[in-house]
Image 1: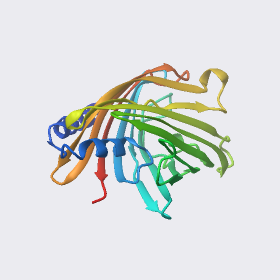
Image 2: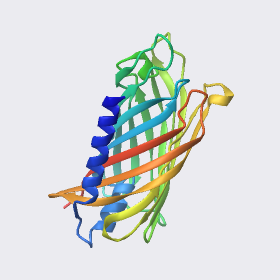
Image 3: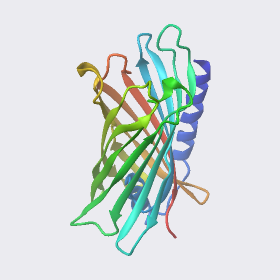
Length: 271
Protein backbone atom coordinates (compact mmCIF):
# COMPACT_ATOMS: atom_id res chain seq x y z
CA UNK A 1 0.00 0.00 0.00
CA UNK A 2 2.85 2.41 0.82
CA UNK A 3 4.48 1.62 -2.53
CA UNK A 4 1.22 2.36 -4.37
CA UNK A 5 0.71 5.58 -2.39
CA UNK A 6 4.20 6.78 -3.34
CA UNK A 7 3.52 5.86 -6.96
CA UNK A 8 0.29 7.85 -7.06
CA UNK A 9 1.80 10.83 -5.28
CA UNK A 10 4.61 10.90 -7.83
CA UNK A 11 2.18 10.58 -10.74
CA UNK A 12 -0.01 13.36 -9.38
CA UNK A 13 3.03 15.63 -8.95
CA UNK A 14 4.00 15.00 -12.59
CA UNK A 15 0.46 15.90 -13.69
CA UNK A 16 0.42 19.13 -11.68
CA UNK A 17 3.86 20.15 -12.95
CA UNK A 18 2.83 19.50 -16.57
CA UNK A 19 -0.22 21.72 -16.17
CA UNK A 20 2.14 24.57 -15.22
CA UNK A 21 4.53 24.07 -18.14
CA UNK A 22 4.86 26.53 -20.98
CA UNK A 23 1.61 26.52 -22.99
CA UNK A 24 1.65 25.74 -26.68
CA UNK A 25 1.53 28.52 -29.24
CA UNK A 26 -1.93 30.11 -29.00
CA UNK A 27 -2.63 29.58 -32.70
CA UNK A 28 -1.66 25.91 -32.78
CA UNK A 29 -3.07 24.82 -29.38
CA UNK A 30 -6.70 24.19 -30.48
CA UNK A 31 -5.53 22.07 -33.42
CA UNK A 32 -3.09 20.03 -31.31
CA UNK A 33 -5.74 19.51 -28.61
CA UNK A 34 -8.25 18.14 -31.10
CA UNK A 35 -5.65 15.86 -32.65
CA UNK A 36 -4.70 14.58 -29.18
CA UNK A 37 -8.37 13.86 -28.43
CA UNK A 38 -8.94 12.11 -31.78
CA UNK A 39 -8.11 8.37 -31.42
CA UNK A 40 -7.45 8.04 -35.18
CA UNK A 41 -5.68 11.32 -35.88
CA UNK A 42 -2.78 11.31 -38.34
CA UNK A 43 -0.52 12.25 -35.45
CA UNK A 44 2.11 10.14 -33.72
CA UNK A 45 1.38 10.06 -29.99
CA UNK A 46 2.38 7.97 -26.99
CA UNK A 47 -0.12 8.06 -24.12
CA UNK A 48 0.78 6.70 -20.68
CA UNK A 49 -2.56 6.10 -18.97
CA UNK A 50 -2.71 5.01 -15.33
CA UNK A 51 -5.99 3.62 -13.98
CA UNK A 52 -6.46 2.93 -10.27
CA UNK A 53 -9.66 0.99 -9.62
CA UNK A 54 -10.80 1.03 -6.00
CA UNK A 55 -12.98 -1.47 -4.14
CA UNK A 56 -11.97 -4.54 -6.16
CA UNK A 57 -12.91 -7.96 -4.74
CA UNK A 58 -14.39 -8.96 -1.42
CA UNK A 59 -11.67 -7.09 0.51
CA UNK A 60 -12.09 -3.85 -1.47
CA UNK A 61 -8.54 -3.75 -2.83
CA UNK A 62 -6.97 -1.38 -5.37
CA UNK A 63 -6.09 -2.66 -8.83
CA UNK A 64 -3.60 -0.49 -10.71
CA UNK A 65 -2.88 -0.64 -14.44
CA UNK A 66 -0.51 1.44 -16.54
CA UNK A 67 -1.46 1.37 -20.22
CA UNK A 68 1.21 2.36 -22.76
CA UNK A 69 -0.73 3.16 -25.95
CA UNK A 70 1.39 4.29 -28.91
CA UNK A 71 -0.57 5.54 -31.93
CA UNK A 72 1.33 5.53 -35.24
CA UNK A 73 -0.28 6.63 -38.54
CA UNK A 74 0.85 5.65 -42.04
CA UNK A 75 -0.16 7.40 -45.28
CA UNK A 76 -1.10 4.58 -47.67
CA UNK A 77 -2.37 6.68 -50.57
CA UNK A 78 -3.39 10.26 -51.16
CA UNK A 79 -6.88 9.31 -49.92
CA UNK A 80 -6.29 6.78 -47.12
CA UNK A 81 -4.40 6.49 -43.84
CA UNK A 82 -3.66 3.41 -41.76
CA UNK A 83 -3.76 4.18 -38.04
CA UNK A 84 -2.18 1.65 -35.67
CA UNK A 85 -3.16 1.68 -31.98
CA UNK A 86 -1.32 -0.64 -29.58
CA UNK A 87 -2.13 -1.12 -25.89
CA UNK A 88 0.55 -2.60 -23.62
CA UNK A 89 -0.91 -3.10 -20.10
CA UNK A 90 1.27 -3.29 -16.99
CA UNK A 91 -0.95 -4.50 -14.15
CA UNK A 92 -0.65 -4.58 -10.37
CA UNK A 93 -3.27 -7.12 -9.29
CA UNK A 94 -4.21 -7.15 -5.58
CA UNK A 95 -4.93 -10.23 -3.50
CA UNK A 96 -8.46 -11.20 -4.54
CA UNK A 97 -8.97 -14.49 -2.71
CA UNK A 98 -7.23 -16.71 -0.12
CA UNK A 99 -4.18 -18.36 -1.63
CA UNK A 100 -3.95 -15.81 -4.45
CA UNK A 101 -1.31 -13.22 -3.59
CA UNK A 102 -0.52 -9.87 -5.15
CA UNK A 103 0.69 -10.22 -8.76
CA UNK A 104 2.34 -7.63 -10.99
CA UNK A 105 3.33 -7.93 -14.62
CA UNK A 106 2.36 -7.72 -18.27
CA UNK A 107 -1.25 -8.22 -19.37
CA UNK A 108 -2.63 -9.13 -22.80
CA UNK A 109 -1.32 -6.80 -25.53
CA UNK A 110 -3.94 -5.39 -27.91
CA UNK A 111 -3.57 -4.07 -31.45
CA UNK A 112 -6.12 -2.25 -33.61
CA UNK A 113 -5.64 -1.21 -37.24
CA UNK A 114 -7.89 1.49 -38.69
CA UNK A 115 -8.34 2.34 -42.34
CA UNK A 116 -9.35 6.00 -42.30
CA UNK A 117 -9.95 8.46 -45.15
CA UNK A 118 -7.66 11.48 -45.23
CA UNK A 119 -10.60 13.86 -45.66
CA UNK A 120 -13.70 13.73 -43.42
CA UNK A 121 -16.99 12.68 -45.02
CA UNK A 122 -19.55 15.47 -44.47
CA UNK A 123 -17.82 16.43 -41.23
CA UNK A 124 -17.55 12.84 -39.99
CA UNK A 125 -14.11 11.40 -39.24
CA UNK A 126 -14.10 7.62 -39.18
CA UNK A 127 -11.89 4.55 -39.15
CA UNK A 128 -12.57 0.82 -39.36
CA UNK A 129 -10.40 -2.27 -39.18
CA UNK A 130 -9.37 -5.47 -37.41
CA UNK A 131 -8.58 -5.66 -33.71
CA UNK A 132 -6.50 -8.30 -31.94
CA UNK A 133 -5.74 -9.35 -28.37
CA UNK A 134 -2.69 -11.54 -27.77
CA UNK A 135 -2.17 -13.92 -24.84
CA UNK A 136 1.00 -12.21 -23.62
CA UNK A 137 0.18 -12.02 -19.89
CA UNK A 138 3.13 -12.85 -17.64
CA UNK A 139 0.83 -14.49 -15.08
CA UNK A 140 -2.37 -16.48 -15.47
CA UNK A 141 -4.37 -14.00 -13.39
CA UNK A 142 -3.35 -11.03 -15.58
CA UNK A 143 -4.84 -12.22 -18.88
CA UNK A 144 -7.35 -14.46 -20.60
CA UNK A 145 -4.92 -17.04 -21.94
CA UNK A 146 -6.60 -16.65 -25.32
CA UNK A 147 -5.69 -14.99 -28.62
CA UNK A 148 -8.69 -13.03 -29.88
CA UNK A 149 -9.71 -11.16 -33.03
CA UNK A 150 -12.55 -8.93 -34.12
CA UNK A 151 -13.37 -5.47 -35.40
CA UNK A 152 -12.90 -1.94 -34.12
CA UNK A 153 -14.34 1.33 -35.37
CA UNK A 154 -13.99 4.98 -34.43
CA UNK A 155 -16.44 7.76 -35.33
CA UNK A 156 -16.16 11.43 -34.37
CA UNK A 157 -17.03 14.95 -35.40
CA UNK A 158 -15.56 18.35 -34.57
CA UNK A 159 -17.66 21.52 -34.29
CA UNK A 160 -15.93 24.63 -32.95
CA UNK A 161 -14.57 23.84 -29.48
CA UNK A 162 -16.48 20.53 -29.34
CA UNK A 163 -15.09 17.11 -30.23
CA UNK A 164 -17.56 14.24 -29.83
CA UNK A 165 -17.22 10.61 -30.85
CA UNK A 166 -17.14 6.95 -29.95
CA UNK A 167 -14.67 4.05 -30.14
CA UNK A 168 -16.14 0.52 -30.40
CA UNK A 169 -14.28 -2.81 -30.28
CA UNK A 170 -15.58 -6.38 -30.23
CA UNK A 171 -13.25 -9.41 -30.13
CA UNK A 172 -13.70 -13.16 -29.58
CA UNK A 173 -11.14 -15.88 -28.91
CA UNK A 174 -9.68 -17.77 -31.88
CA UNK A 175 -6.97 -19.78 -30.11
CA UNK A 176 -4.73 -19.95 -27.07
CA UNK A 177 -4.48 -22.18 -24.03
CA UNK A 178 -6.81 -25.18 -24.15
CA UNK A 179 -7.51 -25.11 -20.41
CA UNK A 180 -8.81 -21.53 -20.48
CA UNK A 181 -12.41 -20.69 -21.29
CA UNK A 182 -13.26 -18.91 -24.54
CA UNK A 183 -13.78 -15.15 -24.42
CA UNK A 184 -16.00 -12.64 -26.19
CA UNK A 185 -15.36 -9.07 -25.10
CA UNK A 186 -17.02 -5.80 -26.09
CA UNK A 187 -15.85 -2.24 -25.45
CA UNK A 188 -17.47 1.09 -26.24
CA UNK A 189 -15.83 4.37 -25.27
CA UNK A 190 -17.86 7.52 -25.94
CA UNK A 191 -15.87 10.73 -25.61
CA UNK A 192 -16.93 14.37 -25.31
CA UNK A 193 -14.39 17.20 -25.17
CA UNK A 194 -14.87 20.96 -24.87
CA UNK A 195 -11.74 23.02 -25.51
CA UNK A 196 -11.03 26.39 -23.88
CA UNK A 197 -8.24 28.85 -24.59
CA UNK A 198 -4.61 28.37 -23.53
CA UNK A 199 -4.79 24.59 -23.95
CA UNK A 200 -7.32 23.82 -21.20
CA UNK A 201 -10.28 21.49 -21.76
CA UNK A 202 -12.92 19.43 -19.96
CA UNK A 203 -13.78 15.93 -21.10
CA UNK A 204 -15.43 12.63 -20.37
CA UNK A 205 -14.34 9.32 -21.91
CA UNK A 206 -15.74 6.41 -19.86
CA UNK A 207 -14.76 2.90 -20.95
CA UNK A 208 -17.89 0.71 -20.99
CA UNK A 209 -17.19 -3.01 -21.28
CA UNK A 210 -19.17 -6.23 -21.59
CA UNK A 211 -18.01 -9.81 -21.08
CA UNK A 212 -20.52 -11.77 -23.17
CA UNK A 213 -19.37 -15.07 -21.63
CA UNK A 214 -19.98 -13.98 -18.02
CA UNK A 215 -23.11 -14.63 -15.98
CA UNK A 216 -25.98 -12.22 -16.60
CA UNK A 217 -25.30 -10.08 -13.52
CA UNK A 218 -21.56 -9.84 -14.23
CA UNK A 219 -21.50 -8.91 -17.92
CA UNK A 220 -21.36 -5.10 -17.84
CA UNK A 221 -19.10 -2.43 -16.39
CA UNK A 222 -20.58 1.05 -16.89
CA UNK A 223 -18.67 4.03 -15.44
CA UNK A 224 -19.91 7.62 -15.27
CA UNK A 225 -17.73 10.68 -14.71
CA UNK A 226 -15.15 12.92 -16.35
CA UNK A 227 -12.46 15.48 -15.71
CA UNK A 228 -10.18 17.87 -17.53
CA UNK A 229 -6.69 18.52 -18.81
CA UNK A 230 -4.29 20.80 -20.61
CA UNK A 231 -2.01 20.89 -23.65
CA UNK A 232 1.46 22.18 -22.75
CA UNK A 233 5.07 22.11 -23.90
CA UNK A 234 8.00 20.69 -21.97
CA UNK A 235 10.80 22.35 -23.88
CA UNK A 236 9.96 21.51 -27.49
CA UNK A 237 7.88 18.46 -26.57
CA UNK A 238 4.09 18.86 -26.84
CA UNK A 239 2.31 17.11 -23.96
CA UNK A 240 -1.33 16.41 -23.20
CA UNK A 241 -2.10 15.69 -19.53
CA UNK A 242 -5.49 15.02 -17.98
CA UNK A 243 -7.22 13.59 -14.92
CA UNK A 244 -10.63 11.90 -14.80
CA UNK A 245 -12.67 10.06 -12.15
CA UNK A 246 -15.47 7.56 -12.74
CA UNK A 247 -18.12 5.94 -10.57
CA UNK A 248 -18.85 2.38 -11.74
CA UNK A 249 -22.64 2.55 -11.57
CA UNK A 250 -22.97 -0.93 -13.13
CA UNK A 251 -20.27 -3.49 -12.35
CA UNK A 252 -19.61 -7.21 -11.88
CA UNK A 253 -19.91 -8.68 -8.39
CA UNK A 254 -16.14 -8.56 -7.83
CA UNK A 255 -15.61 -5.35 -9.82
CA UNK A 256 -14.33 -2.06 -8.45
CA UNK A 257 -16.55 0.76 -7.23
CA UNK A 258 -14.73 3.71 -8.84
CA UNK A 259 -11.67 4.53 -10.94
CA UNK A 260 -9.16 7.38 -10.97
CA UNK A 261 -7.44 7.88 -14.34
CA UNK A 262 -4.32 9.97 -14.98
CA UNK A 263 -2.83 10.27 -18.44
CA UNK A 264 0.29 11.91 -19.84
CA UNK A 265 0.43 11.83 -23.65
CA UNK A 266 3.49 12.73 -25.69
CA UNK A 267 2.51 14.38 -28.98
CA UNK A 268 4.53 14.55 -32.18
CA UNK A 269 2.65 16.88 -34.57
CA UNK A 270 3.79 17.15 -38.16
CA UNK A 271 6.10 20.06 -38.86
